[in-house]
View (cartoon, rainbow, N blue to C red):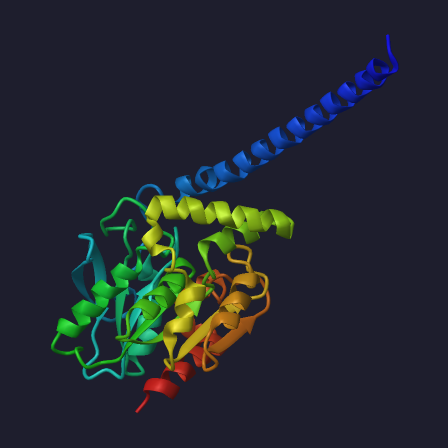
Length: 319
């Protein structure tokens, strides 16, 4: 056997070894990316597919006042139920929106009572796929702006409210929807958001708690998932994009530093993207509702919260 053959044999073994290692690494990468691609639908579909039935709802009568039940129809043909708390010649009409799974928007009747005493009307809108409203899936803020636009159309057609400023006021998913709707709807005069997420991709990844390189990849797969589910034409309907479209309209963003449902990082991203006039209010602790759970039904009992909300509204819409 000549010297060349002796040298070729180890070279071939080395090349085969390198090929096996490269193949193994490629296979591991494919599996890793496949896992990242599967995680968003695996976790999110059970959260959003189907209709939310509430085990508890509230009424205007719980606060010794009256309301009118109305039906709104969205541009994509979904009928929504809403409760109108009337005020004669209101300073503004506040459109309330609630969260992904709880509570029912009727939990805002306490807020409506607080605002009614100060001259503000309220429209409590049960968003699509919640309670008595139609719809078969939650759309994570991509489609829900149509629910707010249906509320705006209703108010603009109502003889008592067609000239009144409209304030979109939402909690969690409702807060994100209020921001998105304002960006898409110039007729919304102001926004108040409680614990809004900066985007669904952000809150999804923030709650995973993974290192940033993995988070970057996972965000891409979450965006791919929501694009396939809700339509890539709605990819711009995210709060960090839409809050920049407020122009000079006022907004109040509220969040708690220890929020375990929508981590504080979402608030920081929204503030970074917001116009300079946007106001903020931060509380310590894990207060997704911005007040203790029981206090949410009676906001006047939390003097600091009530003063911040009423102060914002009076500064911009008080007479």
